[in-house]
Length: 531
Image (tube, rainbow, N blue to C red; front, top):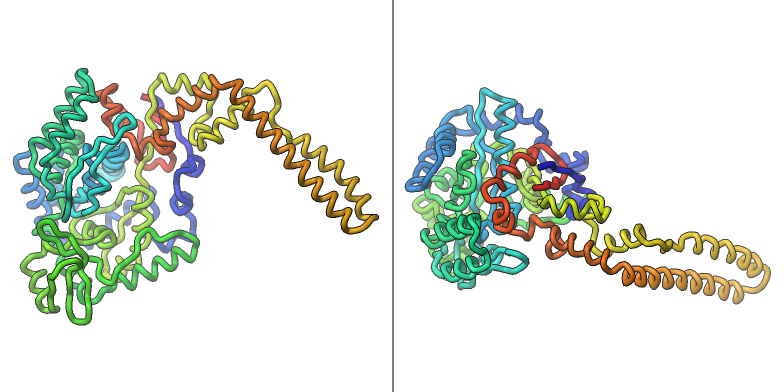
């Protein structure tokens, strides 16, 4: 199962910010702590180890043991939970929303990356232990972003009313989604396994959080993955001092705004925009922003109001009711985990870049930031088609119209490039310009206009010839289009659209090990895996 690579730059799917970060652009140095190369983990281990409180380890282990009660857990995961009580153990973390049935493929790539990096670090630092963590975004409230997945080009969607934290949503109604999905899977052994995974997750668990934990655990438990739900009273108690500081001082708004201005001055867009208070108030069915108006703290879109003393008392009694937004969630993660590195997509890393000054201001170590592995999965049959059509790896990533035009020009027995004709025409008009200069200005204008007209005419003829050749070579064009559509659904990256179920149907339990074997945790290129 060989893998090929292409630079992120050449794919055309990654932002200038991320490409420049991967190039270790000096202009970005102030937006991160340590560049993600294996040699820099020594200092990161030392810094985090000295900072992370021993008492926090005790709370973390107790919470994880409680969250895993009643779950069919592997020895590898149970052992990793115990290891976290030791000062020589650290985490490698990724986070993701609770997408229905894992959502797009990159859900798998994120988690696999935490596993492979943990293994690599153990090889480099045998006296330490490194634990892969998947942080479930249970407190998010953007239900519309997670209530579907795509299977064979169609949406499989869960339609219902939703409010509050998505992790607490009841799984009622997913039986109808299961029935619809099951009819599309067929009756193979791998299809039966997928049906069982979906049914056991969503029809036998009460909430979206517990269902998602079940799926992730089933897929990755043998690798020692730990799945954590941050929506927990004990964990939030560890975060209480920072919540209090946010309520009283609002320093995050000032520091993140300053950092964001530095980023935008360099020409990069802001990924998120800070609010004066970057916290939500969360109770059953409600997750709304906390707003300070004068001396009163109000909960947006509700009648809930607090004075300063009242909200501090509420925090002391009910820390679970205070939920960090996208800007403070990274801080929460770094406070409760002995974490060294966060693995995320381009958008995630972009908002982490806005946070470094804030972390420094409150004296919390900033983690190393690693772009998650990206991959394109293709079958051996698709690879053979690619080879027969003479399509190179960089060409596969072109926009479809550009790909077709390039290939038609290559395979056509007629030269569709009129560059020589344009050069010849321009030479002819040079003589006309010399004549025109000896007459009046009106004739100069007429010559210029005629030159533009003639060159446009050549452009038009070239376009018509290209279209004619497309029709003549329509079979070749169609095979090319069909191939790219298979590997780039919706004219976008496969990993952002396709659900793992499509590949599991064909490859079954060998799918995840095959991906894991082909993804290098420190590789800074896009990987193409032939299964």
